[in-house]
Image 1 (cartoon, rainbow, N blue to C red):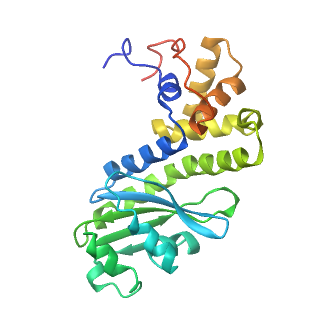
Image 2: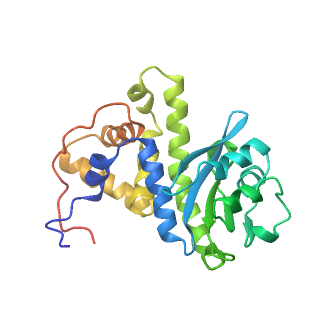
Image 3: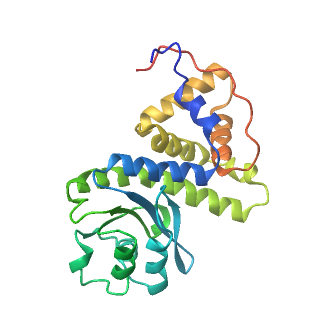
Length: 244
């Protein structure tokens, strides 16, 4: 598609953002596409004194993670709590989690890979991949690790926005802080698969084109992802043809 018809990535991200849940579900769906052998993916995080699934891809049986949290054992739990990657190529012969493997096998999962996520504040988190055949994820382990590195930015944004939303009655006011530009950069890195410098350049370019302060533009993007209001109409696009 030519640059004359392609929306600027930042404008596209602003318009399509439907909240943190949408952003993270999209992230897990992308993970399934990016990792060979993955049939489903989920994000485990610790919130307070319990683990929970922050988001899951389409086709993910809810009990795959929940059974682990209830029993306090399983590949996702171990990866999140210890920061050590867990790989079970064939659950039919896996001895580590006897209270979990029967359920996973009952819903058709034969192979599990859980990659720890390094998120801000020392929070426990993991990106979990599920395969349907023995050894299904073996060839995709490097791709899973690479994707997990990119996913850390989006999970950081989600946890920080949730914390700010819980601690302030006005979410928009809470987002107008020194961290808002970093949060917007993290969103663009996750959504558009670019590095931090590229994401910042996009923010600056659109800020100049729209004659809007960089912090205000970043706040607009982050608040849309946080889901604190109705989606506004699309504004003017950034100058075209400058980015490949």
